[in-house]
Image (cartoon, rainbow, N blue to C red):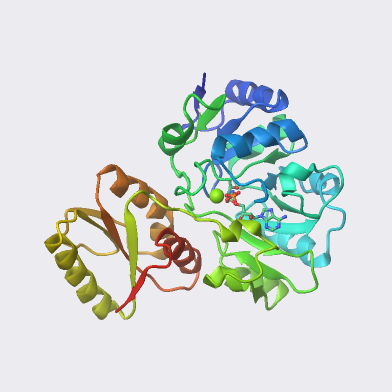
Length: 339
Ligand code: TXA
Ligand code: MG
């Protein structure tokens, strides 16, 4: 049975008590963060964490992020907290930044996928923070079946997990809509492993230049450092195609593609920042913040409306656009049309 707790109007202490009780008993609780919903379990309880992998169908070598509510919790999880990590935590926590650090032996192997590092973040969401404070550090991947778009509404979590986990906290729509930025601070050079809700430019203002792991750009080379990079991601059932290039060209190309696919008898959905004539259309908004917030919801919704193919308009790669384009290209399996 799944208990759904409504906290759309804010933190409810009774509800938090119930959810924290589940976590402490080794059960699974889905909860909102400022990025996407997480599927949480006690990060230090190996059996509980194992259930996350089973519920999601997640490959066991893809490690989880441990969520904390106080900087002092870091001492129990990381063996060493380098200067850059302190600076970044001071500036950006709570917030959409995950840091990979040398792991303390307290953290079980299942949580880190057997790596000698641990990923940690302090989420900027009152429900997430209350839940962690009332229980323990919480390991939580995004609360979607492995390979599906991440959930930005409790309905998405219900679609994927109702009846299969103990508790879902409904905190309404998540604010940022793409997952946290992941940077590795465990080796000599700070390295970006996943662009996300905190723009790279912001991080560089604090600690200077950051290397970008080649897999971020879709090159499948050395994936040992962040095994998550090698798996299929964010895919709805429909085939996704991304159209990138100069704005005017993109506009013309999308219209052309809609026409061609329809002529082939396919039902075509378009997700874009301006209106298109197609079988189904999802308006992503006009700023990069709006596009990030609506991205995963658009993929899930166009799927529900039964389209065969989704044509997605590419946006500029700066700010949140870096995370947006990273997710879109993956969702498309790198099927990119240059206009
Ligand atoms: O915004 C977020 O980060 C959300 C919310 C719930 O906090 N969580 C999330 O978790 O997106 P997940 O599991 O979907 O993505 C975690 C990413 C994966 O790409 C994983 O490979 C990487 O972080 N990761 C985790 N631990 C790591 C480690 N020790 N070394 C390198 N990469 C790691
Ligand atoms: Mg995920």
